[in-house]
Amino acid sequence: MKISKYFETAIGRGVLATADATGMVDIALYARPHVIDEETIAFPMLNRTTYKNLQSNPHAAYLFLEEGPEHNGKRLLLTKIKEEEEGELIESLRQKTYPELKDKVEYLVYFKVDCILPLVETYEKKEAGVHA
Image 1 (cartoon, one colour):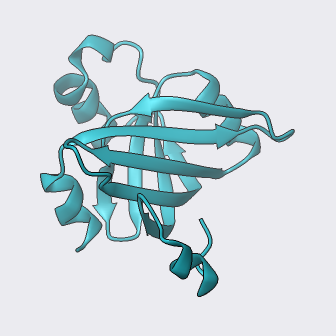
Image 2: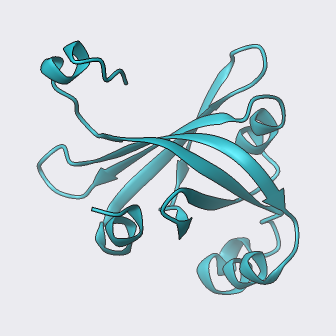
């Protein structure tokens, strides 16, 4: 399934993990990503630890856990490719998607999707050379 279709229909919660240049890790709750195309996603960000980590280390991981009793979801391995402080998309997100944070959202950070993994991998897949 394409990530655009997946995030259009999936219901759940997400977390974004980043690390600074020294390896100190941060993890934060994040809504579903805004899918730009099948290889690019974006997140609106405040000027907090996650954003600051991405200034020195462009790599991140996003985990999306679907609602329900099963362990379904996706893990995305990401690399930051650019950011914006103004523009049509960030203004739209400030006004419509995050009205309670509209004055705090400072950046729209774009990521290349390097790899899409299932939420839970089996041992056999790791043996076959796919590493989480």
